[in-house]
Length: 150
Length: 222
Image 1 (cartoon, each protein chain N blue to C red):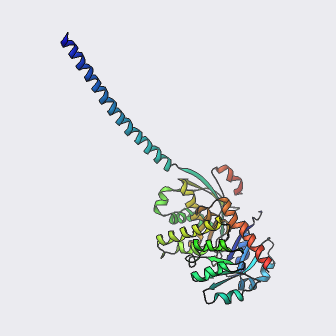
Image 2: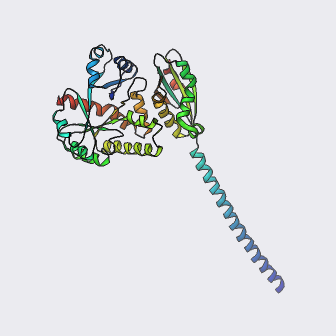
Image 3: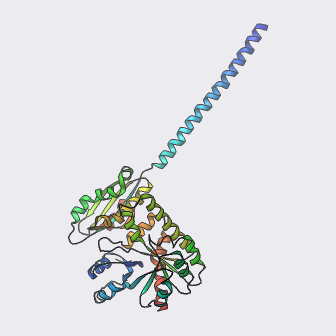
């Protein structure tokens, strides 16, 4: 009987030790997982891509061509944004109206991209001359700007 | 298109046609032209159909020696802006019992700093600041400008404007860049201020409210 009780106590102590060990290791693993989740959430938040549309009016001097300006438009802005800006911000012409010389530009990137692109648009003519791009309106929806293009 | 009561306090064009083009394309309603150029284009400007107030402007560079003389001989038929060359002249300009306009440019930002705003705040007569944004942008596009210096200058400019707005000191903006295609439209000025972090209300104050107040003060003085 004595042996049996000693074995039972030993088993109980062993099971308790195993339970403590498992709890500690589980806590550690859960902590690591939570940290990973937080980092992932933070990164996700930082790199959240926002889409904005900018309505532009183009004004060209007599000796400049609007078509050439539109063709080189993305290159010009990319040059001002720099290499890193080009990676972070995507810039595409969404729509052009030849009658009113207006166009809608789509900016895709984090929240800073929109400001950077707007600034690049505002100073590009001082560097390159010929055509001026005047930001008229901005919106998060293409449909809202479409009525202003014609 | 409805014209917004926005102002570009100084443009430095080379021909009268450029002014016409600028007014036709931009929604500006208060435009400052260099005094000599204003006289030259008087007839052309009279034919403009748009409702625009065109002001003759004059920028005087002053130091501690020439300051008294410049103030004494200041003509009232043109809106004068003072460009201080040293701290002493900037401080004296803040204390003068007269409504004056101080120029904030890359050359004068050393003297028209946050301390200067404190002096302007204590003045009993309304004082105005005129930011030559075009000159700052030109500096940004110069290949010889170091990025660190550029960042410092824009940071300081932002602090000066912010402090001035906080103490209700009039701030106006001039897109003073030389020829027509390389100029700043009021929308560009608005965007640049937005990029610098100013709210819609602050931008409206800078582009619409303070220029109108400056105009009223100048006309009242006249």
